[in-house]
Length: 145
Image 1: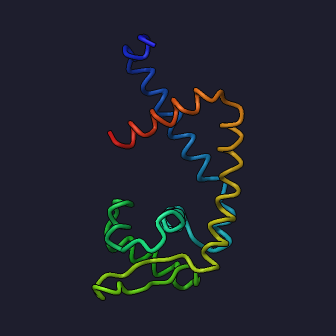
Image 2: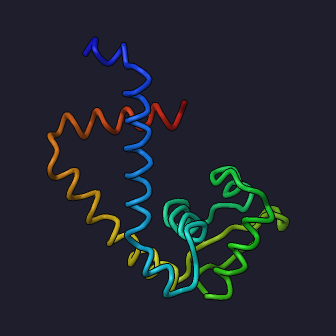
């Protein structure tokens, strides 16, 4: 384990490359589904987050995505036209809008998730339980930087 404490730049570069390729491949899997709806990765990210954070406010969505209002508005407009999402005003503060996946949005998410799940599930199934736990812990530390 002490070997890991002395990672060389080449080893860290290799890890970054693997993270990039894992991300690229995991998000390339549903590409045909996204093309069918004429949407892209940004739309996919919003749909994914809405599947997890049902009724998230627009400002919370902006914080999670770390994108501009203009970029998010474009994506939300596209998803609204596709009848994938719906908005509800907050019951206490009508200036706040909450975003939900509607039935078509839930179906879109499931279609995308099922294809991504195959890759992740196979990798996890072919890993030892301690590898999965340690990998998850490392990912959390990378995310929380």
